[in-house]
Length: 405
Image (spheres, rainbow, N blue to C red):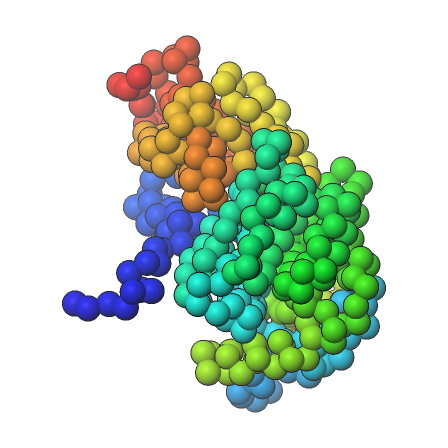
């Protein structure tokens, strides 16, 4: 069978593949612990659910405009004013089928074949393949100092004649690192001076810890919204625990938003009217669920860090936010795919190999599940990897005997 060059170059999303594997194992009755996922356990806000139910009861579920309903756009405008300190118009907003689609259509709107988009490493797994889908090239920028916190020079040294855009994800998936205000100010100024696009992937921007507060890239721009090449992406999946609703958005200048809407109109049309109702309900409703989730995540992070620090050979950087810790397991195996496979095959714990995020030897471990899953999952990992562990382990009434070194 003949496939396109792009189709042959794109592989399945490793995080989605792990979710599918976990579901299959659970269906079989296996006691799997999923420490690889990015899906909080809390329920969607009641305001979101009621908005969807009320809309459903009308029976009037029709096509949506390609760029989103007026109601949701109004909610996003208010959200942008509150959290980004910027007043924008409906023409500056597009609602998409999740933040992922918003990023994808943004890339399609601005990138030509062979042009480059730069992102700090470690990076979200989809950025390289999204660039490929545009015929463009993703360029990873690993911080020179060995941390998860880039400096402007890490980006600057990779900018060339083909560079069209930079994408910044802070707090970062997979590391949980929240980049400094100084770095954000520097990268906004740099991109404006160079005339290149800056996409801010802010999907975790309210899920931050230790008293830190979200800040806005708009605070550092010297240009008006219409003059700016700044594109802000956000959504309801993470902060409102509405992963299955698939509603995200982007804010930018009218010209780029119009181009994104034209592309999206031919791809999928507008997102579901019903789910946009729910998203507007969440944004406009009581916000206590966001803070409740944030507090739960911070507590879970603390438990995971304590567990991992008792694990000989593991190096841990404390996440500033998100759902994830990106821990260095290279003392056990520098091949993170091999390591991740061993953990699922031997002790039924799912983690995501660091290689998928641009750093081998690391594992992304999620703490958005339960405390029980975190503690038991790390206990199983320790048993599988630590040569000083007992030879046997019980998972429920199942006895495992370690027959590997």
